[in-house]
Image (cartoon, rainbow, N blue to C red; front, side):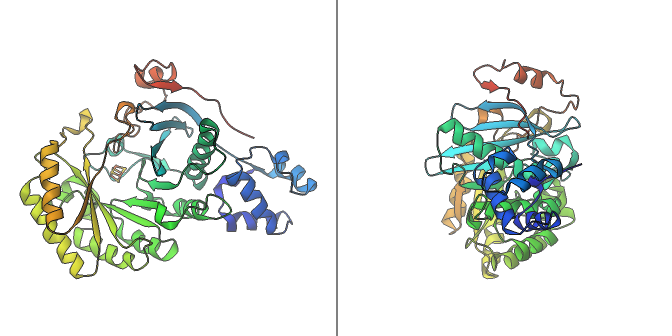
Length: 382
Ligand code: SF4
């Protein structure tokens, strides 16, 4: 079996080149061809020695998961469904805005955390993605979008690890993937523009702070342990006090001067005035400990199995006003890609049939979804 070069950060690729008896600088050349230029054939890599170009196909390949479908929302959001083998699929979402292009990347197939309000969590857990499968989502989206939009410069300016899965429960594969995203010879994204979102895996927050401190978003969703235990079961292992202490430690390394806390607004569950006041007290206690917080309120995206309902906008606004009147920077997330189920917490919610034969998938393959452009693409391989 040959090596998938998307599994390597630059250090790993240098070690691979050394094993082949090649100088380390060859790794930089190879890395640039793959990630910056999107080359898919070794014989395109004209500044590599001919002998290396001939050797590489025998020992290495680039593995890009097959695209099952591409859906484009009326608001410009694009969602890809990738086949990662064994009946597993993952989703990747591109969200264009006036001043940035954000790619939302998956880190696992399904998720073991099982948050009540999350469609992915309701699917259960299948497996971790490899580094190559995480990086391939960025590789594919960046080079597809350049072609699609007719641009030669970088399209994706921000990455959020907020797709399917809990990234910090796949740390060994996440870390090299983050290093590829940040590397100037690959995508050159700034640490401020790469965000890892976690439901609160406390020991791994500390490790990320030491190894690769990118921007951090924490799924909070409740101001007290009793409610959070119910909404985010991982809270039973790492309760709010431990989680916020880890955030305070992280802030010393963080590239931004605040940590974002996500709060999904659930009607009648966590959205009352009392909850808002409790959240203010919690956040104020943390600022006394030196933690700067930003609150991001997320309108819930309903799915039938959850039994939960989105808070009315008036309630979200009341909640937000209580927080901002108390001096807490608060934003309300715009929902994007609603019409293609690409909004937060909706990813791959309809793809449970591991034979790939669910009616929804079949409809996608046949381009039958009303009003949604569906494209079935071919496998990219070399
Ligand atoms: S919200 Fe995140 S951590 Fe929770 S179940 Fe969904 S994917 Fe997993």
